[in-house]
Amino acid sequence: MTIARLIAGRSTEVWSIEADDTVADAVAMLASKRIGALPVRDGGTHVVGIFSERDVLYCLQTRGADMLQLKVREVMTAPAITIDPSTRVDEALGLMTRRRIRHLPVEQDGAVIGFVSIGDLVKYHIDTIEAEAEALRSYIAS
Image 1: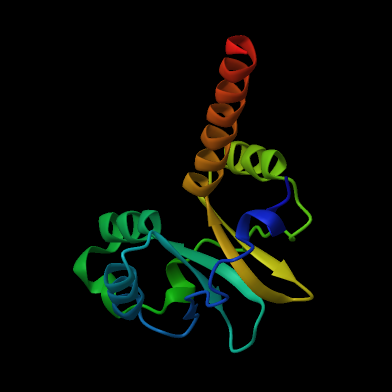
Image 2: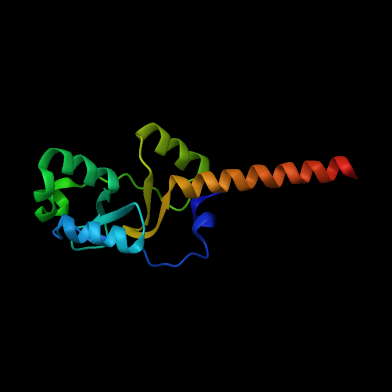
């Protein structure tokens, strides 16, 4: 299955933050939306980085509470690792595992059309395994 099929039917809105916004603004958005990461843009549609809960923790540990006044560009993870809609789910999961990341922006023609988390991909795998198990149980019972 491809990422395109996985994100089909989702809202096309992808929350993001600008690179020149403050860390306080980004933290407020993470909290209000109850999400773990945001794609970071630099005035356009292209993603230049990812701002995540990990970035908050690392920066807080090194800079203290003053980090809230920094620009997102100063603490984000960059460059962003992105995928396109034709990427297979297992490829995306492998990429996340190898690179030790939990979120991937989905880009098409330079614009973000989706954002997937490792939780999305693991849920897909669990659903697939459960469906296969149920099919086997039905086959055996018949």
